[in-house]
Length: 262
Length: 161
Ligand SMILES: Cc1cc2nc3c(=O)[nH]c(=O)nc-3n(C[C@H](O)[C@H](O)[C@H](O)COP(=O)(O)OP(=O)(O)OC[C@H]3O[C@@H](n4cnc5c(N)ncnc54)[C@H](O)[C@@H]3O)c2cc1C
Ligand code: FES
Ligand code: FES
Image (cartoon, rainbow over all chains, first blue to last red; front, side, top):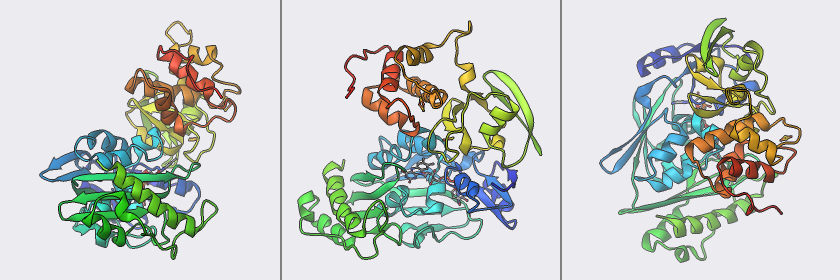
């Protein structure tokens, strides 16, 4: 890893200022960025740690939404969202391992938008909103393809707002070596309809499986999905699984998620 | 270089580090505590697992400067005050929870974090919790037995095939 300057501001305003310098980059839990820097795939001249900013941490219920600070760790989400949004807490409790969950953050996961990351599926299936230091971005506009988001240079995710569904569940088919999902499906049922988001499968990153959403909005049961299959076109194909295999898993994981939804 | 100061196993430790100095490098090279191992350096294996302010973290994936002012616990601080092995360490010895021993400091620290949070974990909970700790020698069964024993539970029933 190349050397860099390290700063640890305690307010969002100071962090934004520090990030306005050229080649400065935000550091969340470091569970993705530090390994990337060790491989010299990223070489910022300055890291601005967000871990000392209390105003972007925590889980709170605000009416029918859950508001989660961008600096909240996966472990905290797993514990504190368990009562209000069990589908989300279940997802968080299976990211990586306990030590990764003690450091990795909601904001870091969403900013990185790894095509196999778990949280993007929760945000998209919840029809949530990303709150930054300068604006609010709807989930449907936020994800713009593998490792690409609507965030600008130096923009900080301060929170996400997630409408709490009536029922939800996340099913992850784990790639055993990395423990990332080979395919993950998040299903969320709202009064106004069902949303289904798929991660791990597509070359474009997380996406909504709209055919399944329509079928489930009429009849929220695994049998409503009989005969539906996701297309293998545009799906990731690698040593862990072909695009056809991933497409097949989408159907299987969606059915399991509907059956398990609580 | 920037100065950094933290409490490690109850003692104050300070030093001069670069931005990129990892917590594990600080512990091994400056604090002289080489019990914390580097197995992979890619956050996969857990050999470097320590506690920072009570939470299990992989010290190869945390900067020394991020631990400024923190309470850090490593394997060197685990033995009882009289130098005898603590309950978890003794259980690893009794149940042959180690062979080469390279993963053991991380396993013991991980087990300690688990038992603090969940004093009587089931076999499944132990296996799940230790997912981020890799052992190339034991095949895990004896590690799981050791953790069950350390929590005061019967190890007879564990799946051993
Ligand atoms: C062994 C292992 C297993 C894992 N398994 C999984 C898994 O199963 N599922 C999964 O989803 N993830 C998994 N991860 C990734 C983990 O969830 C990361 O914590 C997460 O992707 C990144 O979060 P972070 O806080 O560590 O971000 P960092 O690594 O600090 O940063 C990642 C990126 O986000 C930017 N950033 C960080 N915080 C913010 C913010 N608040 N606003 C704007 N930009 C920000 C950084 O500049 C950087 O570009 C795993 C990681 C490891 C090491
Ligand atoms: S050395 Fe840190 S996880 Fe392997
Ligand atoms: S005892 Fe050798 S790696 Fe675990």
